[in-house]
Image 1 (cartoon, helix red, strand yellow):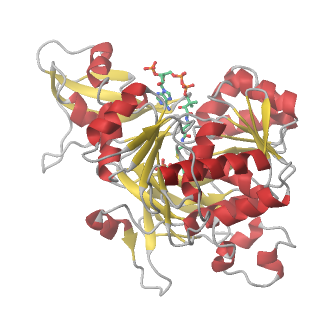
Image 2 (cartoon, rainbow, N blue to C red):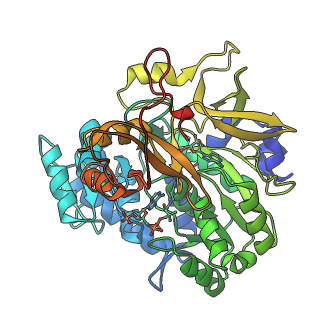
Length: 504
Ligand code: MCA
Ligand code: AMP
């Protein structure tokens, strides 16, 4: 694969000093110190726009400082976990950054989660606090917590107090615990340390030339690494600004690009599909860069978006556990159907079976309190450079660019959200009228893959609506089946295990 220095400008210090070592990426220590420096240097710089109002860097800094004081006054100590289950807003980001500044560990969660899903996260990390958007979620958190727990809304409706020393977390301290299922099993928390976040953000901001002149149209959810780390942290680190949209809507995105003289848009393929289908992709022609990731961008969609926008979309490849791994280049050929080559500091290798392994300062070092899973997650190839993370993705090196060719892990990606077949099967198996069930992803132009339930009925087969109604208290809507297929039997191997790949 092409070397990562091909992503950098000739005068980038990582190249110019001849010190092209990954540790230099994390020389600044933590993102918190980078942000504090930025905000101190230019407090009048515009940072976020929300609902027609601009927030300056100085205002945001003051709000995060107040948030840190509230967390401290509520009795929270560095290292304790705060579940952060919220939509996108400046207040929510201030609560989040304030928690990090106070040394707390933030645990992002999708606000669409059911009680079962949220309770799993709260219990697993032994949360000491939670930020939630709705009263029923607040009750779910209290019910899932045996001891005292601080529960508040995104505005952090808690008493003010002295924030004490801010930004004291070191590079090795945990910053985020992000839930994901890895290659197998139940959702578990990937622990991202401050140095992982710094490396992950440094690499993309340099590779994509992000600067104080940039204005991002931000319509991704902030509870995943794409919208949170690449979108929000990237903006703060580069010293740029962003218009925060509460949700993705093609017209709102296109109108914002026009009204604000924006320069950047980051999206998942479903968003690009909708921009093209709604005839709004040409509005993105004013941007200097459109990035796609989180799911495969089909070549036809890449071609359609690039033609409408007038420059090639840049596709990149990331994971919760590793942040961003590879990217097509800012300068040079962006090849449709590929995810480019390693970002600065990242090493990528392929096993004989084509499995993608990654290593670098961006890569996490384990799931929260999961020794068995951690033993399986890493592989030592004996090259003396340390452990490689096993991604569960399959790929090939085509002329220096990584092409992803499927996955060894059982995962459905619908609209950029991950769905694990076993989790959905476990819920559907208890639905009346279901004798046996298997779940797969059916290719879809809009969603990438659509969750599909293959049902062996017990009597009258349940309808799709009945299956979805059964899932309601247990699974977020994006995990619920969109298609149902009634079959006489499920394909099984010699050991009796269902072979999902033979369905469809
Ligand atoms: C919403 N629904 C979905 C999805 N999203 N169903 C399946 N798959 C989905 N992704 C449900 C809604 O709950 C609703 O259900 C129904 O579909 C219709 O919703 P609609 O309004 O059409 O959808 P939407 O709300 O506009 O959402 C579509 C979306 C959204 C904007 C594409 O899914 C999205 O923001 N995706 C981005 C995901 C993302 O950021 N992934 C990054 C993770 P009902 O009718 O029952 O209420 S991966 C990552 O972070 C790594 C590091 C990486 O590489 O980036
Ligand atoms: P998550 O666990 O939500 O972080 O999802 C990570 C997974 O998303 C990766 O392991 C890939 O399977 C997939 N992914 C991310 N970006 C891309 C991309 N550009 N093309 C194909 N798959 C991707």
